[in-house]
Length: 97
Image 1 (cartoon, rainbow, N blue to C red):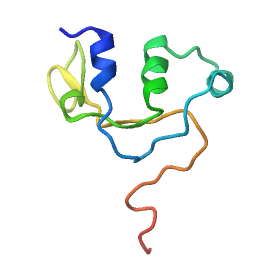
Image 2 (image 1 turned 180 degrees about the vertical axis):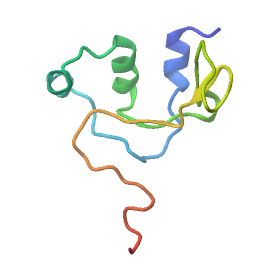
Image 3 (image 1 turned 90 degrees about the horizontal axis):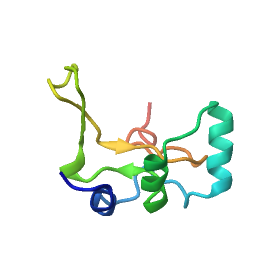
């Protein structure tokens, strides 16, 4: 199994979909205070490389110890939201109603 430094280097799939501005300590403090939690260091490490976006094709599975609706051993992880206030840019957001 790859170590975290290797995974971190190839986790993001590129593009700008849902990528927030560069993560700052102030944004982390604000988010943690708003949510009432301490965010995991590994998550913050990933978000410091790229603050949200599409996950690389080879990394789009989150392992689980129990079956999910998707599979016996994982849940899908196609994108990861970053920390910030920039509105999401979904493909449907500009489509007429």
